[in-house]
Length: 241
Image (cartoon, rainbow, N blue to C red; front, side, top):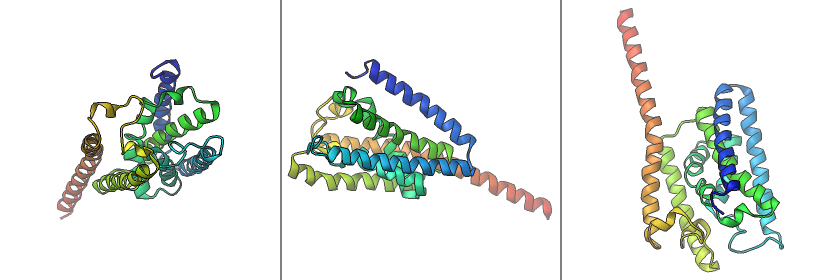
């Protein structure tokens, strides 16, 4: 049941962990300890993601509509692991934009079965979704990686290409990975955006606006800092002459 005691407890725990992760990574910024901690976290996330994928593919758990790693959150786990381990710019940007907007939908409005699932699936589902939420907080607010417009375009392009990749697979298998062929069966925010494909257009526009809002403050701050630095250099030059 959405927003029952279990669901609210999970969301509350995620909120507390978010504060702790930002606080801890900011304190450790620039140290070897932070680099090792992020790298280790990435390997743990990668291993757990592989194990969950294999577990879903086992005969007793196999279901064509749910077991293939084709949801945005499925591929995002692996991309986020790459971002944590190697700190590649493209992976960090996808982790930031997808992880803080697409991924939370699975936590805020999960399918009701994910709140009463058997222990293995419950642990993997919530543990991985929470980890993918926390990772960009650590990378951006903690380790100091900064979004820019190139990263915005890259993340948006990746989201578009993934939808194009998954659509024909869904059509062939009768599945709905990424929810790009129809809205999810359970309650979700997509219910307010109209039928297919209208809701995809609205989601695309909303993503563009939201991700732009997530980019602009960082680029504006860098521009302001550059101007301040230029003025200081100019002032020093005038003084010295």
